[in-house]
Amino acid sequence: MSDIIAAIATGRAPCAIGILRLSGPGCAALTGRVFTPKQPFADAPDRRLVLGLLHDRQGRVIDECLGVVCRAPHSYTGEETVELQCHGSPAMLAAGLESLLAAGARQAGPGEFTRRAFLNGKLDLTQAEAVVDLIDAETADAAANAAGQLGGALKRAIEPVYDGLTDLCSHFHAVLDYPDEDIEDFGAAELSGALDRAGAALQELLATYEKGRHLRQGVRAVLLGKPNAGKSSLLNRLAGYDRVIVTDIAGTTRDTVEEPVRVGRVLLRLTDTAGIREAGDAIEALGVARSEQAAREAELALFVCDASQPLTDEDRRAIEAAKCAPRSLALCNKSDLPAAVSPDELPFDTVLTVSARTGAGLDALPALLEGWFLGENACDGSLLTNPRQFGALDRASRAIERAKTGLSLGVTPDAVLTDVEEAMAALGEVTGRTVREDITNRIFERFCVGK
Ligand code: GDP
Image 1: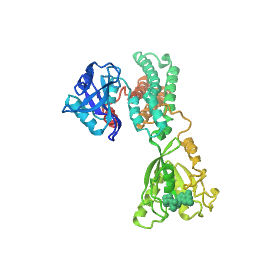
Image 2: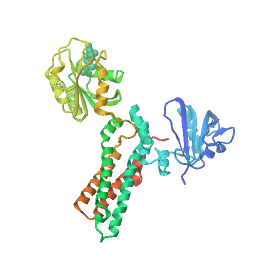
Image 3: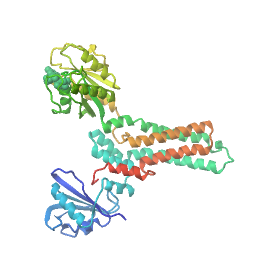
Image 4: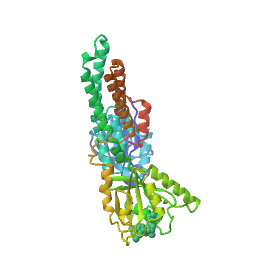
């Protein structure tokens, strides 16, 4: 039987509401020692808010707040749980928690509530991981996809494949139990058809990962161009506030600066660089090396030029660096000034004429980047976003491919069975059916305390 855990579930800054949370058999009675509504809290009606007074360890009233009991099994963790909705003073919440701990609760570890939900079968591992993704979501699309996964979208995609492989295994066991029969007697065509279906379903899921990764982690992007082209001004304009100092003294941006910037539905992890140029001094030389490195590591390079001046060798070096990234485009900046560069001069498929000063031309960027990095996919939980899940599904897919090859080459049924079982084990790791404890530990360590 599990003990009673307690935690502050809300942030550390003062805010309107702060929540104390408990889980474990008997937590309503324990809470009733420090939270006193008119009726004893242990007898409070299930899932109904009641108003009461919260006391600190010394018995002083520290808040008037609402409490709710959710009794097992109809709660987040599957156990009896309590939430106290208090005023959001961090000091008061800390005193309230201390009071609950003194009454016999134990401080919850990171993700311990969700771990209990997982162990009690309320969530599978894809849903538990979706909880963190939902908390960490930086765009509405990322939240929508995580909410879909929390609703079981991924689990529903994987389970039919797992069930199909279970059927296959029983066929193979039958083959192994009757060694004198030929595998043909068990319908080799049918078996390979089932493997094909499982493999295709996994391939379909794996193919969503690139977009899913962009959704969850954002797109690594870099601004490249000679000093004073307007990179920092563009970053500030896209970020919506002055993230970087802008001056007309060349070389002001000495180091690389990374900023998450939302462009339409796309989250760019945008790096501003010191500019590709002949290094004037040691610090700047370091900055230049970093910008070249950033270009090599980026998924998208945005080349920026000052289109009011003819192109120079410095611009050409920046163009070369930008071309190292898998995707690149050119921003002909300072369109509010008379043009000295024509877009045709720039060796990029996509050239936008823009002004960081006025914002002109930048409205074309969202649709362009959404098309490149997110596509038309519905963000309903069907996108695979998590590297751990991708790795395990990829292993499952490879094992199925081996089983298919084995079957077509006529290897012994037990060899094919080994591959199918390996695929099942990998799928089980994704949903948590067969996952090792050290892996679940690592997953729940990423959670915040109180979740
Ligand atoms: P960086 O060195 O490439 O980061 O360039 P900055 O963003 O620091 O800009 C250099 C200078 O160009 C600053 O004085 C900016 O105000 C100016 N600037 C940037 N964008 C524009 C623009 O679109 N139009 C005009 N007229 N000036 C700009």
